[in-house]
Image (cartoon, rainbow, N blue to C red):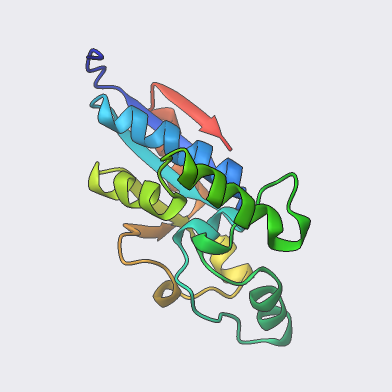
Length: 160
């Protein structure tokens, strides 16, 4: 069994790609399972990991972004081999065949392990994503200064 480290980790999640979200949640849950305090700050495309499956955007551009990038964590596609959605299906099937935890289940594990989830308010404003469109487990919608403070007090910081 791994020794409990009791350190602080801070992760910025800027990508909404399937493989990058998966990597971010694997690192976060691994650190949390070892007794570390973990903060994840989701910004721009990374917000997909925290979004509910609801339409967003009020202005024309906001609705366009919501439609083009719409969806929740289940709509994340691989950064390579997307093949217009076929890659997402293929990777999910391959992972299921190998008994690998799904991305939504991995996010839930992070929540269950007490990982702190924060959404970038500025990104939400730009992309016209209201707080109501985020999962309930998001602790707060915060600015970059909040994350800088978290990172300054962390033992390690990662940018994904």
